[in-house]
Length: 211
Image 1: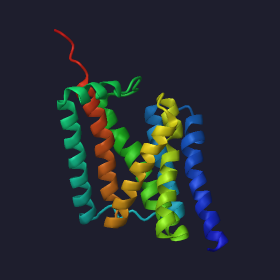
Image 2 (image 1 turned 180 degrees about the vertical axis):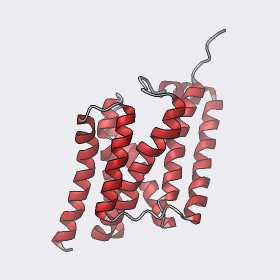
Image 3 (image 1 turned 135 degrees about the vertical axis):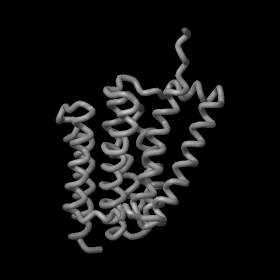
């Protein structure tokens, strides 16, 4: 294993994590500003490091749409189940700066899905795979995705270790979809379904006000 590619992969990983956990929070932006900044950083990151997205993939769309449909159906079943609905209520976001519609239609697809999929599945994970091989590379990519969420967990009042573990698992699934389809489209669609479906499910699960 040559030293140069290893240092480049580690530097690319460190840059992504410093951006998410230090630089972006340090800017003190509101939600719209964070979305714009994240998208700009992701675009520059992908261009500088030779991101490989292949967004226009029929196979990626079909696989991603099917996976997303399963997730949305699962959310629907959870909302319909009394015990799971109560659990969803506890997960409802608090202190949200924008409307649910803007959150689901703009900030999740642009600030989260586009940005994170371009940084990780399109750019960093292929770099790690090429550098560390098909066994270690995917593990490092998934773990880096988990570490990316340290500050968001802290800012949202969520426990850090379980959040990192859950997002590492999610990153592993997203990475598998990218490798299977050769496209970022599939993980992007699943990523949106998981995040947007979660927002919508928690809102539907909230008790309705008595007229």
